Length: 90
Image (tube, rainbow, N blue to C red; front, side, top):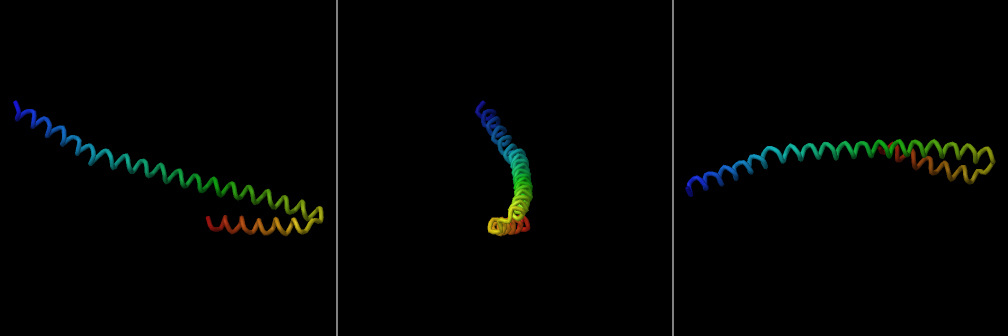
């Protein structure tokens, strides 16, 4: 009887090791793929947000030039250059 209990415990422990060796790495790779996709999506959304901001700032610069407020236009131009550098870095 003790032999069969020991054999049963050995089988259960072996199954636990097989589960750890096969199933856990597969789940780990799935989670890593999801995280990579989230980072890629976040980077893309950030880039689109910067492009939208850049378009709005160019419109603001045009309006400032039309109103002959050149100090604001120069300030906006500096900000536009900063955003363009950030977009190039992405």
